[in-house]
Length: 129
Image (cartoon, one colour):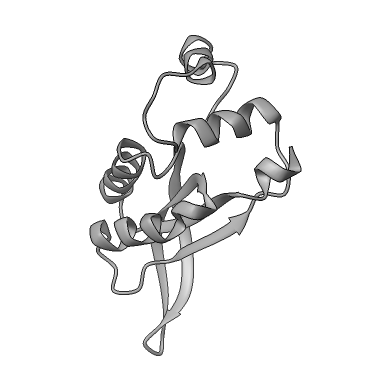
């Protein structure tokens, strides 16, 4: 299980509005660059930008993907994002439930039918993104 997890990443991205967050999330999942993207918000972000303290409402994307796909995830986010310098931060997954991690790998692999994917569709209330 730890061996599977070590190749997986959670990528955090902040978006300026919910529509932009949804557009990015959908593109990542459609292109199999992410198994799941959670959109949280609005959240309040306080940060320094160009010498001024900003206090803004943003939306947080929590993207589940594979380490090998990170550069493509980053490229797609930059392509669709409105910010000059979008926040894109990846962290390694140390451990996780084996069925969930297998589903994550399967969902970001080349498209094909699998037992894990079929289970996911059949029991969407038991296994969440």
